[in-house]
Image 1: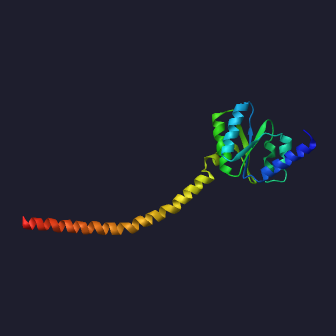
Image 2: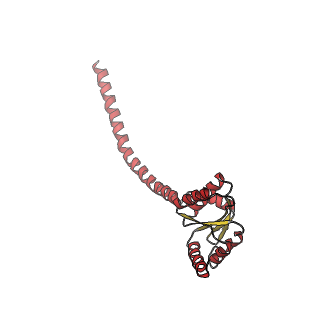
Image 3: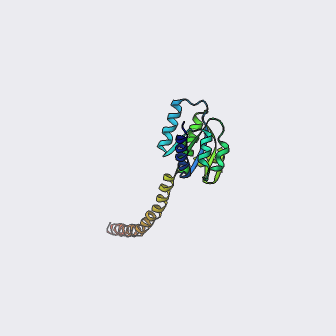
Length: 178
């Protein structure tokens, strides 16, 4: 690899790392190309990236970012996963690691916060950004539907009471006549 090519690679990786909400470091020893392709596709579907690079170049790319503390994890055959949504990359990697023991989560970072494998697992169990938005919309709409139901309830109740009185009066009239 030429020196200029390495500089471009480090610069592009630096920008990707700097703009990410989460960076996860994994060992992928023994994974086949097909398994790696499946993982990449799953991460891509979750709007995340997966990069296998030389550890030395990755350390250079992490310099000057919030993820500089993740550098000690870069030993052996490592790869990085990045995402703007901290939950999506963690969720895909945790699920894939459960199903495939060749992928081992080493740790990562969420901004300047270092994450252990357990921390990444905890992130994976959280609802995604889209799910949180849906829950928030549901919570905001639920009181409105309850208010409408309560406003309709007195009218419905009043109508039922009036009908009950009318039915009772009819039954009294029938009993008096009969």
